[in-house]
Image (cartoon, rainbow, N blue to C red; front, side, top):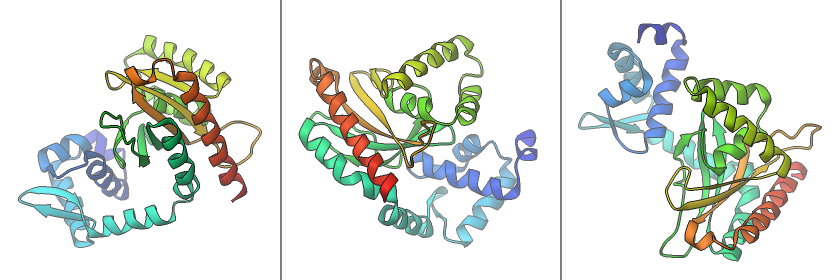
Length: 250
C-alpha cells in the first residue's frame, strides 16, 4: 500500500476514491473500498472526510456511496453530453429495427463504461447497465474500443490487463488487426454466457488515422442472434456511421 501511495498525488487519491465508489454501483464498506483503492486506511479516511464535506460522498451505517454533488454532476453530464445527444435517436432507431438492446460505450482508463442504454422490449433481453464498467479485455465492446484507440493508449491498457498473460495478449492483438480491417467487432459468450454482440467505433472528428474512444454496441441472446448476425452487423454499422457524421459536423 505504501508503494501505491508514493506513486500518486494527493489529488489523484481523491479521484481514486471517487472512481472506486462510482464503479462499485452500490454502497460500499471501508474494507472493500480500501481493497479497491489500495490506500492505507488512515489515508482513505482522510479522503472520505474531505469528499463528505464537499457533498461528493454520503454515508449510511458505515457504508459509502456517491453524494448529492456527484448526482448533480451525473445529471449535468446526461443533459449536456454531445455524444449521448448525437447518439440517442440512432440508438432508438436501431433498437426498434432489430428488436434488441443497444448501448453507447466509452473507454475510461482500463475499463469499458456504458454511457447510455436503450433496452429491448423482449422479456428475455441482454443489457449493459448504464454507468457500470467492465475490464477492457473481452467482448465486442472492449475489442472495438481497443482496436480503434490511439496506439499509446492501447499499449498502456494491454500492458496492465495482460501483464501475466503474454500469450493471451498476442492472440488479442492479432484479433484487433482483423477488427480494424473490417470495421467492427463481434463476440459470443465472451463476457456473459449466451450473449452475442457487435460493436462499431464512433469517430468524433475526421482525421488521417482512425482513432476512436467510443463505440455503439448491439447485444442479443445468442439464440435470437443465430441467423440474423448480418442484419445486426449492418444495422449497427449504419447507426454508428450516422452518429459519427453528427459528431463531425455538429
